[in-house]
Image (cartoon, rainbow over all chains, first blue to last red; front, side, top):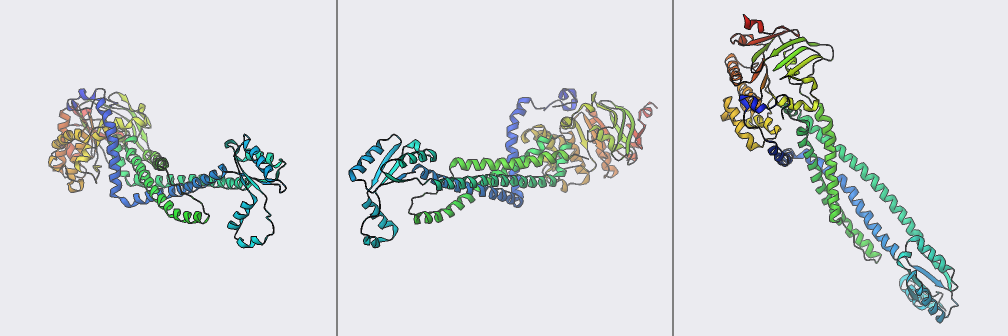
Length: 329
Length: 225
Protein backbone atom coordinates (compact mmCIF):
# COMPACT_ATOMS: atom_id res chain seq x y z
CA UNK A 1 0.00 0.00 0.00
CA UNK A 2 1.45 3.28 -1.02
CA UNK A 3 -0.20 6.38 0.34
CA UNK A 4 1.89 9.03 -1.30
CA UNK A 5 2.60 7.48 -4.66
CA UNK A 6 -0.30 6.10 -6.53
CA UNK A 7 0.74 3.27 -8.85
CA UNK A 8 4.19 3.52 -7.44
CA UNK A 9 5.30 0.39 -9.22
CA UNK A 10 4.72 1.76 -12.71
CA UNK A 11 5.59 5.33 -11.93
CA UNK A 12 9.28 4.76 -11.41
CA UNK A 13 11.71 3.06 -13.69
CA UNK A 14 13.54 1.81 -10.67
CA UNK A 15 10.55 0.00 -9.28
CA UNK A 16 8.58 -1.48 -12.10
CA UNK A 17 8.42 -5.07 -10.93
CA UNK A 18 7.92 -7.25 -7.95
CA UNK A 19 5.08 -5.59 -6.02
CA UNK A 20 2.87 -8.24 -4.56
CA UNK A 21 -0.70 -8.71 -5.80
CA UNK A 22 -3.33 -8.44 -3.06
CA UNK A 23 -4.31 -12.12 -3.06
CA UNK A 24 -0.70 -13.08 -2.62
CA UNK A 25 -0.48 -10.85 0.42
CA UNK A 26 -3.74 -12.24 1.78
CA UNK A 27 -2.32 -15.74 1.53
CA UNK A 28 0.80 -14.56 3.29
CA UNK A 29 -1.07 -13.32 6.38
CA UNK A 30 -1.67 -16.73 8.02
CA UNK A 31 1.74 -17.93 6.89
CA UNK A 32 3.29 -14.92 8.62
CA UNK A 33 1.33 -15.60 11.77
CA UNK A 34 2.64 -19.13 11.95
CA UNK A 35 6.16 -17.95 11.18
CA UNK A 36 6.01 -15.33 13.89
CA UNK A 37 4.53 -17.76 16.39
CA UNK A 38 7.39 -20.14 15.76
CA UNK A 39 9.87 -17.28 15.81
CA UNK A 40 8.63 -16.13 19.24
CA UNK A 41 8.99 -19.66 20.52
CA UNK A 42 12.55 -19.72 19.21
CA UNK A 43 13.20 -16.37 20.85
CA UNK A 44 12.03 -17.77 24.17
CA UNK A 45 14.15 -20.84 23.66
CA UNK A 46 17.23 -18.66 23.36
CA UNK A 47 16.49 -16.97 26.66
CA UNK A 48 14.79 -19.77 28.53
CA UNK A 49 15.32 -18.75 32.15
CA UNK A 50 13.14 -15.64 32.33
CA UNK A 51 10.49 -17.30 30.19
CA UNK A 52 10.45 -20.43 32.32
CA UNK A 53 10.03 -18.39 35.47
CA UNK A 54 7.06 -16.58 34.02
CA UNK A 55 5.51 -19.80 32.80
CA UNK A 56 6.03 -21.42 36.18
CA UNK A 57 4.40 -18.50 37.96
CA UNK A 58 1.50 -18.66 35.55
CA UNK A 59 1.18 -22.41 35.97
CA UNK A 60 1.42 -22.36 39.76
CA UNK A 61 -1.06 -19.51 40.04
CA UNK A 62 -3.55 -21.59 38.10
CA UNK A 63 -2.77 -24.73 40.07
CA UNK A 64 -4.24 -23.41 43.31
CA UNK A 65 -7.68 -22.52 41.94
CA UNK A 66 -7.87 -25.65 39.84
CA UNK A 67 -6.96 -27.94 42.75
CA UNK A 68 -9.47 -26.19 44.98
CA UNK A 69 -11.97 -26.58 42.20
CA UNK A 70 -11.39 -30.33 42.16
CA UNK A 71 -11.88 -30.38 45.93
CA UNK A 72 -15.15 -28.47 45.79
CA UNK A 73 -16.37 -30.55 42.88
CA UNK A 74 -15.80 -33.76 44.81
CA UNK A 75 -17.34 -32.47 48.02
CA UNK A 76 -20.45 -31.33 46.25
CA UNK A 77 -20.73 -34.65 44.45
CA UNK A 78 -20.62 -36.38 47.82
CA UNK A 79 -23.22 -34.14 49.36
CA UNK A 80 -25.32 -34.50 46.25
CA UNK A 81 -25.40 -38.22 46.72
CA UNK A 82 -26.34 -37.72 50.37
CA UNK A 83 -29.06 -35.30 49.42
CA UNK A 84 -30.34 -37.83 46.93
CA UNK A 85 -30.56 -40.56 49.51
CA UNK A 86 -32.22 -38.39 52.06
CA UNK A 87 -34.30 -40.80 54.04
CA UNK A 88 -36.94 -40.21 56.61
CA UNK A 89 -36.77 -42.37 59.64
CA UNK A 90 -40.10 -43.09 61.33
CA UNK A 91 -39.91 -44.34 64.90
CA UNK A 92 -43.19 -46.12 65.48
CA UNK A 93 -45.19 -46.19 68.65
CA UNK A 94 -44.32 -49.15 70.83
CA UNK A 95 -47.88 -50.31 71.43
CA UNK A 96 -48.44 -51.10 67.73
CA UNK A 97 -48.97 -54.69 66.78
CA UNK A 98 -47.05 -56.32 63.97
CA UNK A 99 -50.16 -56.44 61.79
CA UNK A 100 -50.73 -52.75 62.33
CA UNK A 101 -47.17 -52.04 61.35
CA UNK A 102 -47.59 -54.14 58.22
CA UNK A 103 -50.69 -52.20 57.30
CA UNK A 104 -49.04 -48.88 57.96
CA UNK A 105 -46.04 -49.89 55.87
CA UNK A 106 -48.20 -50.89 52.94
CA UNK A 107 -50.26 -47.76 53.30
CA UNK A 108 -47.16 -45.60 53.32
CA UNK A 109 -45.53 -47.31 50.38
CA UNK A 110 -48.65 -46.77 48.31
CA UNK A 111 -48.37 -43.04 48.74
CA UNK A 112 -47.34 -41.08 45.63
CA UNK A 113 -44.53 -39.22 47.27
CA UNK A 114 -42.77 -42.27 48.60
CA UNK A 115 -40.48 -44.43 46.59
CA UNK A 116 -39.86 -47.25 49.00
CA UNK A 117 -40.33 -48.18 52.59
CA UNK A 118 -38.11 -50.51 54.54
CA UNK A 119 -39.17 -51.96 57.84
CA UNK A 120 -36.51 -52.51 60.45
CA UNK A 121 -38.12 -54.64 63.19
CA UNK A 122 -36.98 -53.77 66.68
CA UNK A 123 -35.07 -57.04 67.12
CA UNK A 124 -33.14 -56.44 63.96
CA UNK A 125 -32.49 -52.89 65.14
CA UNK A 126 -31.07 -54.20 68.34
CA UNK A 127 -28.79 -56.59 66.46
CA UNK A 128 -27.50 -53.77 64.30
CA UNK A 129 -27.01 -51.61 67.33
CA UNK A 130 -25.04 -54.37 69.01
CA UNK A 131 -22.78 -54.71 66.01
CA UNK A 132 -22.15 -51.05 65.36
CA UNK A 133 -22.23 -49.40 68.75
CA UNK A 134 -19.53 -51.51 70.33
CA UNK A 135 -21.61 -52.23 73.41
CA UNK A 136 -21.83 -55.81 72.18
CA UNK A 137 -22.59 -58.31 74.89
CA UNK A 138 -23.47 -55.64 77.38
CA UNK A 139 -26.80 -55.22 75.68
CA UNK A 140 -27.68 -58.81 76.48
CA UNK A 141 -28.20 -57.72 80.06
CA UNK A 142 -31.20 -55.67 79.05
CA UNK A 143 -34.37 -57.38 80.07
CA UNK A 144 -36.38 -56.11 77.16
CA UNK A 145 -35.70 -54.41 73.87
CA UNK A 146 -35.88 -50.62 74.32
CA UNK A 147 -35.87 -49.91 70.61
CA UNK A 148 -39.02 -49.17 68.66
CA UNK A 149 -39.86 -50.57 65.26
CA UNK A 150 -38.57 -48.35 62.58
CA UNK A 151 -39.73 -47.58 59.05
CA UNK A 152 -37.11 -46.11 56.75
CA UNK A 153 -38.90 -44.11 54.08
CA UNK A 154 -37.16 -43.06 50.90
CA UNK A 155 -39.13 -40.22 49.35
CA UNK A 156 -40.00 -40.19 45.66
CA UNK A 157 -37.57 -38.50 43.31
CA UNK A 158 -39.17 -35.07 43.42
CA UNK A 159 -39.58 -35.11 47.21
CA UNK A 160 -35.91 -35.45 47.99
CA UNK A 161 -34.87 -31.82 47.99
CA UNK A 162 -34.66 -30.25 51.43
CA UNK A 163 -37.94 -28.33 51.40
CA UNK A 164 -40.17 -31.03 49.99
CA UNK A 165 -38.64 -33.64 52.24
CA UNK A 166 -39.38 -31.46 55.20
CA UNK A 167 -43.02 -31.13 54.15
CA UNK A 168 -43.19 -34.89 53.87
CA UNK A 169 -41.64 -35.17 57.30
CA UNK A 170 -44.41 -33.06 58.82
CA UNK A 171 -46.99 -35.21 57.13
CA UNK A 172 -45.54 -38.35 58.71
CA UNK A 173 -45.13 -36.67 62.03
CA UNK A 174 -48.88 -36.30 62.23
CA UNK A 175 -49.66 -39.93 61.59
CA UNK A 176 -51.20 -41.85 64.42
CA UNK A 177 -48.69 -44.67 64.24
CA UNK A 178 -45.61 -42.48 64.32
CA UNK A 179 -44.00 -41.58 67.61
CA UNK A 180 -41.25 -39.54 66.10
CA UNK A 181 -40.09 -38.78 62.58
CA UNK A 182 -36.62 -37.65 61.79
CA UNK A 183 -35.06 -36.16 58.71
CA UNK A 184 -31.48 -35.20 59.14
CA UNK A 185 -31.46 -32.30 56.75
CA UNK A 186 -30.23 -29.52 59.00
CA UNK A 187 -26.59 -30.49 58.91
CA UNK A 188 -26.83 -30.92 55.16
CA UNK A 189 -28.00 -27.33 54.91
CA UNK A 190 -25.07 -26.22 56.99
CA UNK A 191 -22.67 -28.22 54.89
CA UNK A 192 -24.17 -26.70 51.77
CA UNK A 193 -23.69 -23.23 53.22
CA UNK A 194 -20.07 -23.98 54.02
CA UNK A 195 -19.55 -25.32 50.53
CA UNK A 196 -21.07 -22.18 49.07
CA UNK A 197 -18.73 -20.14 51.20
CA UNK A 198 -15.74 -22.14 49.99
CA UNK A 199 -16.89 -21.81 46.41
CA UNK A 200 -17.24 -18.04 46.72
CA UNK A 201 -13.84 -17.76 48.37
CA UNK A 202 -12.42 -19.92 45.63
CA UNK A 203 -13.92 -17.66 43.00
CA UNK A 204 -12.47 -14.54 44.62
CA UNK A 205 -9.11 -16.22 45.06
CA UNK A 206 -9.06 -17.39 41.46
CA UNK A 207 -9.89 -13.88 40.31
CA UNK A 208 -7.08 -12.36 42.34
CA UNK A 209 -4.61 -14.99 41.11
CA UNK A 210 -5.66 -14.48 37.51
CA UNK A 211 -5.18 -10.74 37.88
CA UNK A 212 -1.73 -11.26 39.29
CA UNK A 213 -0.92 -13.59 36.39
CA UNK A 214 -1.96 -10.89 33.94
CA UNK A 215 0.25 -8.37 35.71
CA UNK A 216 3.21 -10.72 35.87
CA UNK A 217 2.98 -11.63 32.19
CA UNK A 218 2.47 -7.96 31.37
CA UNK A 219 5.58 -7.03 33.27
CA UNK A 220 7.70 -9.72 31.62
CA UNK A 221 6.53 -8.62 28.20
CA UNK A 222 7.16 -4.99 29.14
CA UNK A 223 10.77 -5.86 29.98
CA UNK A 224 11.00 -7.77 26.70
CA UNK A 225 9.77 -4.74 24.81
CA UNK A 226 12.13 -2.36 26.57
CA UNK A 227 15.10 -4.62 25.92
CA UNK A 228 14.22 -4.53 22.23
CA UNK A 229 13.71 -0.82 22.12
CA UNK A 230 16.37 -0.23 19.47
CA UNK A 231 15.01 -2.95 17.28
CA UNK A 232 11.50 -1.55 17.56
CA UNK A 233 12.71 1.93 16.64
CA UNK A 234 14.44 0.55 13.55
CA UNK A 235 11.37 -1.40 12.52
CA UNK A 236 9.25 1.71 12.88
CA UNK A 237 11.74 3.65 10.78
CA UNK A 238 11.43 1.24 7.90
CA UNK A 239 7.65 1.36 8.03
CA UNK A 240 6.47 -1.37 10.36
CA UNK A 241 2.99 -0.86 11.78
CA UNK A 242 2.35 -1.23 15.50
CA UNK A 243 0.36 -4.35 14.73
CA UNK A 244 3.34 -5.91 13.00
CA UNK A 245 5.71 -5.04 15.82
CA UNK A 246 3.44 -6.21 18.60
CA UNK A 247 2.56 -9.54 17.05
CA UNK A 248 5.63 -11.46 18.25
CA UNK A 249 5.12 -10.12 21.78
CA UNK A 250 1.50 -11.23 21.75
CA UNK A 251 2.64 -14.64 20.59
CA UNK A 252 5.16 -14.75 23.39
CA UNK A 253 2.34 -14.04 25.86
CA UNK A 254 0.22 -16.77 24.30
CA UNK A 255 3.13 -19.20 24.53
CA UNK A 256 3.56 -18.34 28.20
CA UNK A 257 -0.08 -19.30 28.68
CA UNK A 258 0.26 -22.38 26.51
CA UNK A 259 3.17 -23.81 28.43
CA UNK A 260 2.03 -22.39 31.76
CA UNK A 261 -1.28 -24.17 31.23
CA UNK A 262 0.47 -27.50 30.71
CA UNK A 263 2.49 -26.75 33.82
CA UNK A 264 -0.76 -26.17 35.74
CA UNK A 265 -2.12 -29.51 34.49
CA UNK A 266 0.89 -31.44 35.60
CA UNK A 267 1.05 -29.87 39.03
CA UNK A 268 -2.69 -30.18 39.60
CA UNK A 269 -2.70 -33.82 38.55
CA UNK A 270 0.27 -34.48 40.81
CA UNK A 271 -1.51 -32.76 43.70
CA UNK A 272 -4.68 -34.77 43.15
CA UNK A 273 -2.68 -37.97 42.96
CA UNK A 274 -0.96 -36.99 46.20
CA UNK A 275 -4.19 -36.15 47.98
CA UNK A 276 -6.02 -39.17 46.61
CA UNK A 277 -4.27 -41.73 48.78
CA UNK A 278 -4.91 -39.63 51.86
CA UNK A 279 -8.56 -39.24 50.92
CA UNK A 280 -8.89 -42.95 50.31
CA UNK A 281 -7.49 -43.70 53.76
CA UNK A 282 -10.01 -41.35 55.33
CA UNK A 283 -12.96 -42.72 53.40
CA UNK A 284 -11.91 -46.28 54.13
CA UNK A 285 -12.01 -45.46 57.83
CA UNK A 286 -15.57 -44.23 57.31
CA UNK A 287 -16.34 -47.46 55.56
CA UNK A 288 -17.45 -45.72 52.43
CA UNK A 289 -16.77 -46.33 48.78
CA UNK A 290 -15.39 -43.15 47.39
CA UNK A 291 -13.57 -42.31 44.21
CA UNK A 292 -11.82 -38.96 43.95
CA UNK A 293 -12.80 -37.38 40.65
CA UNK A 294 -9.87 -35.75 38.86
CA UNK A 295 -10.11 -33.20 36.08
CA UNK A 296 -12.10 -34.16 33.02
CA UNK A 297 -10.79 -33.56 29.53
CA UNK A 298 -13.08 -30.57 29.13
CA UNK A 299 -11.82 -29.06 32.36
CA UNK A 300 -8.21 -29.53 31.30
CA UNK A 301 -8.96 -27.73 28.06
CA UNK A 302 -10.71 -24.98 30.01
CA UNK A 303 -7.63 -24.49 32.19
CA UNK A 304 -5.53 -24.32 29.06
CA UNK A 305 -7.79 -21.81 27.38
CA UNK A 306 -7.83 -19.67 30.53
CA UNK A 307 -4.04 -19.82 30.77
CA UNK A 308 -3.58 -18.79 27.14
CA UNK A 309 -6.18 -16.07 27.58
CA UNK A 310 -4.39 -14.70 30.61
CA UNK A 311 -1.02 -14.76 28.81
CA UNK A 312 -2.53 -12.94 25.85
CA UNK A 313 -4.28 -10.38 28.04
CA UNK A 314 -1.10 -9.63 29.96
CA UNK A 315 0.98 -9.21 26.86
CA UNK A 316 -1.75 -7.20 25.15
CA UNK A 317 -1.82 -4.71 28.01
CA UNK A 318 1.97 -4.33 27.95
CA UNK A 319 2.13 -4.12 24.17
CA UNK A 320 -0.64 -1.56 23.87
CA UNK A 321 0.96 0.70 26.36
CA UNK A 322 4.61 0.42 25.38
CA UNK A 323 4.87 -0.19 21.64
CA UNK A 324 3.01 3.01 20.88
CA UNK A 325 5.20 5.01 23.18
CA UNK A 326 8.42 3.91 21.52
CA UNK A 327 8.99 6.27 18.63
CA UNK A 328 12.14 6.97 16.65
CA UNK A 329 13.91 10.15 17.67
CA UNK B 1 8.50 15.72 -4.87
CA UNK B 2 9.28 17.37 -1.54
CA UNK B 3 7.76 20.78 -0.93
CA UNK B 4 8.13 22.84 2.25
CA UNK B 5 5.80 25.82 2.64
CA UNK B 6 6.67 28.29 5.41
CA UNK B 7 7.56 25.44 7.72
CA UNK B 8 8.53 26.22 11.31
CA UNK B 9 9.36 23.79 14.03
CA UNK B 10 9.65 24.71 17.67
CA UNK B 11 10.47 21.94 20.09
CA UNK B 12 8.78 21.76 23.46
CA UNK B 13 11.01 23.87 25.66
CA UNK B 14 11.19 26.71 23.18
CA UNK B 15 14.08 25.76 20.93
CA UNK B 16 13.22 26.86 17.41
CA UNK B 17 14.82 24.39 15.05
CA UNK B 18 13.33 25.67 11.79
CA UNK B 19 11.66 28.93 10.92
CA UNK B 20 9.76 29.71 7.74
CA UNK B 21 11.54 27.22 5.56
CA UNK B 22 10.47 27.16 1.92
CA UNK B 23 11.84 24.94 -0.79
CA UNK B 24 10.95 22.40 -3.41
CA UNK B 25 12.88 19.34 -4.53
CA UNK B 26 11.63 18.08 -7.89
CA UNK B 27 10.96 14.42 -8.70
CA UNK B 28 14.12 12.66 -9.73
CA UNK B 29 16.30 15.47 -8.39
CA UNK B 30 19.41 14.92 -6.27
CA UNK B 31 20.19 17.59 -3.71
CA UNK B 32 22.41 18.20 -0.72
CA UNK B 33 21.22 19.77 2.49
CA UNK B 34 23.98 21.41 4.45
CA UNK B 35 24.61 23.63 7.43
CA UNK B 36 26.36 23.55 10.80
CA UNK B 37 25.35 21.02 13.38
CA UNK B 38 22.23 22.36 15.02
CA UNK B 39 21.23 24.31 11.94
CA UNK B 40 18.13 22.15 11.56
CA UNK B 41 19.15 19.54 8.98
CA UNK B 42 18.03 16.59 11.04
CA UNK B 43 14.81 18.31 12.02
CA UNK B 44 14.05 18.96 8.36
CA UNK B 45 14.54 15.28 7.49
CA UNK B 46 12.44 14.23 10.49
CA UNK B 47 9.59 16.37 9.21
CA UNK B 48 9.69 14.50 5.90
CA UNK B 49 9.80 11.07 7.52
CA UNK B 50 7.10 12.10 10.02
CA UNK B 51 9.26 11.56 13.07
CA UNK B 52 8.29 15.11 13.92
CA UNK B 53 5.38 17.31 12.93
CA UNK B 54 5.82 20.98 11.99
CA UNK B 55 4.60 23.67 14.38
CA UNK B 56 3.52 25.82 11.45
CA UNK B 57 3.45 25.61 7.67
CA UNK B 58 3.06 22.44 5.66
CA UNK B 59 5.15 19.71 4.13
CA UNK B 60 4.03 18.02 0.94
CA UNK B 61 5.39 14.88 -0.61
CA UNK B 62 4.28 14.20 -4.16
CA UNK B 63 1.49 16.72 -3.57
CA UNK B 64 0.19 15.01 -0.42
CA UNK B 65 -0.10 17.20 2.63
CA UNK B 66 1.60 15.36 5.48
CA UNK B 67 -0.66 17.13 7.98
CA UNK B 68 -3.44 14.88 6.73
CA UNK B 69 -1.53 11.71 7.50
CA UNK B 70 -2.93 10.07 10.61
CA UNK B 71 -0.54 8.40 13.08
CA UNK B 72 -1.79 5.01 11.95
CA UNK B 73 -0.80 5.86 8.36
CA UNK B 74 2.72 6.96 9.21
CA UNK B 75 4.24 3.49 8.64
CA UNK B 76 2.87 3.45 5.09
CA UNK B 77 4.41 6.83 4.36
CA UNK B 78 7.77 5.59 5.63
CA UNK B 79 7.59 2.64 3.27
CA UNK B 80 7.70 5.12 0.40
CA UNK B 81 10.83 6.76 1.73
CA UNK B 82 14.18 5.04 1.86
CA UNK B 83 16.02 6.36 4.89
CA UNK B 84 19.73 6.15 5.57
CA UNK B 85 21.29 7.14 8.88
CA UNK B 86 24.72 8.12 10.04
CA UNK B 87 24.70 5.32 12.64
CA UNK B 88 23.25 2.84 10.10
CA UNK B 89 20.55 1.68 12.52
CA UNK B 90 21.08 -1.97 11.68
CA UNK B 91 19.81 -4.86 13.76
CA UNK B 92 23.03 -6.11 15.26
CA UNK B 93 21.79 -9.60 16.09
CA UNK B 94 20.49 -10.24 12.58
CA UNK B 95 22.44 -11.14 9.47
CA UNK B 96 22.98 -8.73 6.60
CA UNK B 97 20.33 -10.63 4.69
CA UNK B 98 17.74 -10.29 7.44
CA UNK B 99 18.51 -6.61 7.85
CA UNK B 100 18.01 -5.85 4.19
CA UNK B 101 14.96 -8.10 3.96
CA UNK B 102 13.23 -6.37 6.90
CA UNK B 103 11.29 -3.75 4.88
CA UNK B 104 10.07 -6.46 2.49
CA UNK B 105 9.01 -8.75 5.34
CA UNK B 106 7.13 -5.84 6.87
CA UNK B 107 5.33 -5.34 3.58
CA UNK B 108 4.26 -8.98 3.61
CA UNK B 109 6.81 -10.76 1.45
CA UNK B 110 7.87 -14.25 2.36
CA UNK B 111 11.57 -14.83 2.85
CA UNK B 112 11.71 -16.78 -0.42
CA UNK B 113 10.09 -13.96 -2.35
CA UNK B 114 12.29 -11.38 -0.70
CA UNK B 115 15.50 -13.29 -1.41
CA UNK B 116 15.84 -12.23 -5.03
CA UNK B 117 15.33 -8.56 -4.31
CA UNK B 118 17.58 -8.61 -1.26
CA UNK B 119 20.36 -10.19 -3.27
CA UNK B 120 19.84 -7.65 -6.07
CA UNK B 121 20.03 -4.77 -3.57
CA UNK B 122 23.18 -6.17 -1.97
CA UNK B 123 24.64 -6.69 -5.43
CA UNK B 124 24.09 -3.01 -6.20
CA UNK B 125 25.96 -1.88 -3.11
CA UNK B 126 28.69 -4.45 -3.72
CA UNK B 127 28.06 -6.68 -0.72
CA UNK B 128 26.70 -9.77 -2.43
CA UNK B 129 29.35 -11.89 -0.72
CA UNK B 130 28.47 -10.69 2.81
CA UNK B 131 24.89 -12.00 2.90
CA UNK B 132 25.38 -14.24 5.91
CA UNK B 133 27.61 -11.88 7.88
CA UNK B 134 26.54 -10.02 10.97
CA UNK B 135 26.91 -6.22 11.00
CA UNK B 136 29.69 -6.34 13.63
CA UNK B 137 31.83 -8.33 11.21
CA UNK B 138 31.70 -5.51 8.65
CA UNK B 139 33.65 -2.26 8.35
CA UNK B 140 31.95 1.12 8.84
CA UNK B 141 31.67 1.68 5.11
CA UNK B 142 30.20 -1.76 4.58
CA UNK B 143 27.68 -1.27 7.36
CA UNK B 144 26.62 1.97 5.74
CA UNK B 145 26.16 0.16 2.46
CA UNK B 146 23.99 -2.45 4.17
CA UNK B 147 21.89 0.47 5.41
CA UNK B 148 21.65 1.75 1.84
CA UNK B 149 20.69 -1.66 0.52
CA UNK B 150 17.91 -1.79 3.12
CA UNK B 151 16.71 1.66 2.06
CA UNK B 152 16.52 0.78 -1.64
CA UNK B 153 15.29 -2.80 -1.45
CA UNK B 154 11.66 -1.66 -1.65
CA UNK B 155 12.58 0.64 -4.55
CA UNK B 156 11.22 3.80 -2.99
CA UNK B 157 10.85 6.88 -5.20
CA UNK B 158 12.55 9.01 -2.54
CA UNK B 159 15.78 8.53 -0.61
CA UNK B 160 16.68 10.53 2.48
CA UNK B 161 20.17 10.31 3.93
CA UNK B 162 21.21 11.88 7.21
CA UNK B 163 25.01 12.31 7.31
CA UNK B 164 25.55 9.07 5.38
CA UNK B 165 29.28 9.73 5.14
CA UNK B 166 29.70 11.07 8.66
CA UNK B 167 32.04 8.36 9.88
CA UNK B 168 33.80 7.56 6.62
CA UNK B 169 37.04 8.71 5.04
CA UNK B 170 36.85 10.80 1.82
CA UNK B 171 37.42 7.87 -0.51
CA UNK B 172 34.66 5.77 1.06
CA UNK B 173 32.43 8.83 1.23
CA UNK B 174 32.80 9.32 -2.48
CA UNK B 175 31.90 5.69 -3.13
CA UNK B 176 28.73 6.12 -1.12
CA UNK B 177 27.83 9.29 -3.01
CA UNK B 178 28.46 7.48 -6.31
CA UNK B 179 25.95 4.88 -5.18
CA UNK B 180 23.36 7.59 -4.60
CA UNK B 181 24.12 8.98 -8.04
CA UNK B 182 23.36 5.60 -9.56
CA UNK B 183 19.97 5.44 -7.89
CA UNK B 184 19.33 9.01 -8.94
CA UNK B 185 20.03 8.06 -12.54
CA UNK B 186 17.09 5.64 -12.53
CA UNK B 187 14.76 8.36 -11.32
CA UNK B 188 14.93 8.23 -7.54
CA UNK B 189 14.85 11.62 -5.81
CA UNK B 190 17.71 11.87 -3.31
CA UNK B 191 18.12 14.35 -0.47
CA UNK B 192 21.39 14.07 1.43
CA UNK B 193 22.03 16.01 4.62
CA UNK B 194 25.72 16.50 5.28
CA UNK B 195 28.11 19.00 6.77
CA UNK B 196 30.95 17.62 4.67
CA UNK B 197 31.42 20.73 2.54
CA UNK B 198 34.50 19.30 0.86
CA UNK B 199 32.43 16.47 -0.51
CA UNK B 200 29.74 18.80 -1.81
CA UNK B 201 32.32 21.06 -3.43
CA UNK B 202 33.60 18.21 -5.58
CA UNK B 203 30.14 17.55 -6.93
CA UNK B 204 27.88 19.80 -8.89
CA UNK B 205 24.54 19.20 -7.30
CA UNK B 206 21.97 21.57 -5.92
CA UNK B 207 22.83 22.48 -2.35
CA UNK B 208 20.31 23.77 0.18
CA UNK B 209 21.92 25.58 3.09
CA UNK B 210 20.41 25.99 6.53
CA UNK B 211 21.66 28.40 9.16
CA UNK B 212 20.06 28.67 12.59
CA UNK B 213 16.87 27.18 11.27
CA UNK B 214 16.55 29.45 8.25
CA UNK B 215 17.12 28.44 4.66
CA UNK B 216 19.75 30.98 3.64
CA UNK B 217 20.31 29.44 0.22
CA UNK B 218 18.01 26.99 -1.57
CA UNK B 219 20.68 26.31 -4.20
CA UNK B 220 18.66 27.51 -7.14
CA UNK B 221 20.61 30.71 -7.86
CA UNK B 222 23.81 28.68 -8.00
CA UNK B 223 22.40 26.63 -10.83
CA UNK B 224 21.45 29.74 -12.72
CA UNK B 225 24.94 31.18 -12.50
